[in-house]
Amino acid sequence: MPKIFWKAGLFVVGLATLAFSANFFFSQQIKQSGNLIRPVRLKALMSFYDFGLLPMAAGKRVYSFEINNVSQESVEVGKFYTSCRCATANLIVGGQKIGQADFLGSSVAASAKEVLSPNQTATVEVIFDPAAEGPAGTGLKESFVYLEDKSGMPLKLGIRALVKL
Image (cartoon, rainbow, N blue to C red; front, side, top):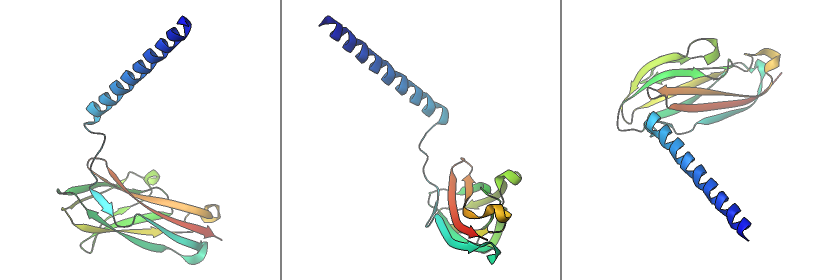
């Protein structure tokens, strides 16, 4: 009987040590980052669009996402880039093209340097080229557009197409 109590006691001590360690780790993360939970500042009414089946020879397709600064303060869009060579994007504010995003791996991420006032809307025009990667690019293709504000908080917009020859 005493062996069972001994094992149970060790188990309880182990759990307490684990709980203390986890609490210490996460409290340090909060101290370092200031806050793990950041408020949403940029929001899209719709954040994903599916072009469906697209022949490679169909040419470029365009879809526009409307975004909005939902915070109570101005937001400066910093980095602006795409995840794939098959897509580029334009940031349009007040009818004027402000910046163009390209594939992050091809160069340094574009910097839009546009400030959106509280409740101001803008458009992200995504241009998808089903032929961008040639015959090797057939099949299901997804690409994402990222807009980062100065805090590094990204807004992620996505497109998808099933590309065929």
